Length: 354
Image 1 (cartoon, rainbow, N blue to C red):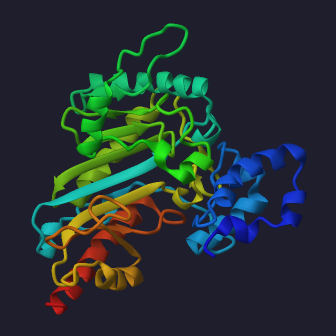
Image 2: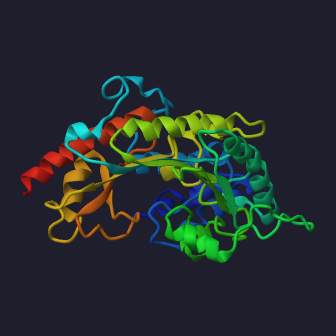
Image 3: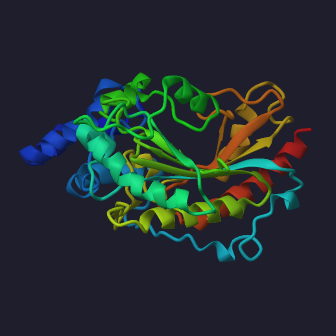
């Protein structure tokens, strides 16, 4: 019932496209057809799909994001006017050191999106990104190393960053690396999990607080995490890291004039950003579930998850993961302001629930 692909992909709409577009649209919609329980049920295959297949994607996007038909996305990372002169200090809300994290999805203009990549293209993409990783490793603020799962680069060329499966599992257990995508039926149907483990891996900074996944649902998931109380610090560091990556020749992030940064899944379009903190809400979760916390958080535009991500349990001490739901038709700086303001209101409700 929530499958937006099934809702909007009518026979008349499908037949309104030319043969070439029909073939691409079939690939985009396959995950929704093969997995009727999908929420969205579609993934873009190339950065241009949101333009060439706009008659299909636009209603899906605006329905999912609850957007005005004429809304256009605006990118704005200038957080100098959020909080107090750009500072969002959560200790002022009575909170001690917290786990803070901001991530974005990015894709390059010169490659297909992961759903349409073949093994050779996945390897070529990884090799393109090595220049950015080398640049980061050379900078004292980053350092670090690359961990790759790609068995080889083809034609007898060895992968200098190849790690063992044991090392990979250690990175997964430490929440540094993503899990085997081949086990995800939605990503499998979309072609996003194909050719596993070629073109998959991550770059990790020396302090383990700046991480870039490559070859997941988006070509890049770039994230910054830290324990502290200054929410703006992770936001500002992520922005600086993104600028380093995109300063490399041949690395241009794909954008749309309507929808901002291009992502495989329409749910992440716009900012591609998820900003989250782990906070303790023992009173709102005293029944052992996050139902009350969700009820309070939902009108504030916040999502509540377990500390391991979606569909994971809450912490035994009532720790939950809180993040703003909005990604599209919202500015980057507004997302962290929304998170800060939302937590302040959530903490008031937590006190009332005592």
